[in-house]
Amino acid sequence: MDYALLWFVIVGVLFAGYAVLDGFDLGVGALLPWIKDDDERRVLYNAIGPVWDGNEVWLVTGGGALFAAFPPVYATVFSGFYLAFMLLLFALIFRAVAIEFRSKEPWPWWRRWWDRGFFAGSTTASFLIGVAMGNIAWGIPIDESGEFAGTFLGLLQPYALLMGVTTVSLFMMHGAIYLHMKTEGALQARIRRWINPLIIAFIVCYAVVTLATLLYIPHITDVLRAQPVLFVFAILLVLAIANIPREVHHGRDGRAFLSSCATMLLLMALFGLGMFPHMVYSLPNPQYSLTAYNASSTRKTLHTMTIIAAIGVPIVLAYTASVYYIFRGKVKVTKDSY
Image (cartoon, one colour):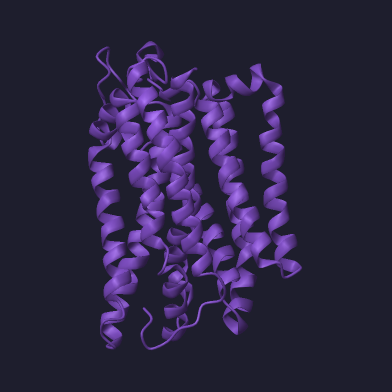
């Protein structure tokens, strides 16, 4: 068995799961300033309240799997992106604190303060996730020993920043679709009017990123050129995006959200296909790149991890499914809610 390939896929699935699940949480936070009424803002908090912390389990699990399966990749990325990851961690922590503290007091100034923290944390985290992915795709300077040889400011290059903006727009679209599924009445009608403009904003950003990728990052398209059949993922992506407004128009909220989830998964699949076998592409010295093969743990380690994953992943999936099943349906805000 090709364990390196298997764990490349597993790590990708875990991070894709995080993007799909925590993506709408972050998108809801980015949409918060569009809602002015305090009761309606509480609806937004309670739409994600039962699930946001469970969603972040996927990020922790993905990081742990990366550390165990590809230690050099973990070491290079987490040391090279240290300041960026600290900012991301601070944003996620501040966002979590805002969710828990916001409704502890009824004072308007108190709630406004935590609302701003929730918005800032959600938007900053979304942007930094996109910047990190942009740098991974573009390539970062790695020396012959596999260590990051760049600077923090060097990570803020135009393509990575563009990817950050695109990620924010994607999460906002995803969050609006989730809110449309969880709300009702006047608030739902207002959110429904946001969806198409947000889809258009995302499509514009994604088109610009795709054009920049084709022009400046040729290694991303090597796999698709070598295996044209894989272009089916791009076709499915277009169909998933197009199906969202169709399902919303027909009042099928659940299907619209599933289409949005499919959009996220297909985007991550295209990213993974474009990167393989690279995990960290070295620029300007591609020979120093870290791949799924030269940066993986030993075969015995990966074999043992596969057995553990076969036991643990179904448990995580069952936990996630049960939480979403228990808290299905429209949001009802009571005095004990967030």
